[in-house]
Length: 300
Image 1 (tube, helix red, strand yellow):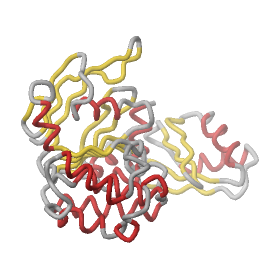
Image 2: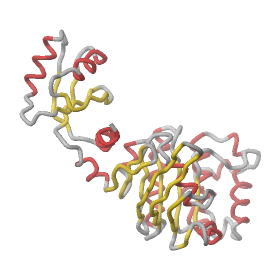
Image 3: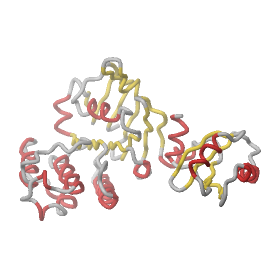
């Protein structure tokens, strides 16, 4: 295994950041930690990159213990924190050269590894990092994390605040890095990005809710799910929550996702109920549960 986490816990005073977390990441896998802000993702990343000590439990990266062999780990992993942390007064080229020097290498030596990424920002190599756009900063940070040819790459919410086009480009780059044999642990609050991982762990309030492939996670939803819409979405949510056999109700884009607790649920009965509540333009249709639906179900 490339990453092994066994019963890791960490608290800050009375706040329990992560609680008895265990999982494994295979070599060459893209593994996603999926959860909202405050779920414990960053704390776990800092423990695995040897920047923070856990209160209890053990963890290993590339077969090395995060406490006893932390120096070896730092030489063989790349870490891209959620917040842009490069030197804003240095140019693109100076930042990359600085990180290469720290790890005893050069840009030229490992250029092939970062070529697909760096070529997009190379025309701006003399520009200060602080003057780059969000997408360009992201590509520079990833280049700096890769310049020493790491075996494992840690990416903590790398696409937060980045436009959709740059997000897609970023994930295309991750797939190419995976093809080069790099293990990737990535955290994200975006459920559409979760579907791009080989396996995911859903995390909430410092606890792992479920670990599986994105496809299997979606299948874990316990009942049939329906898209429901009317001309008054706010009132629709309130009325669905009051329906006699309601299991769950969540807004989902232009729809409201509705699940019923009855095995004998009849959509036309729900339609009659909504008509009695004076709703108009009622639409009820069966839909496939997503990762987000399962996450909401597990965390409710």
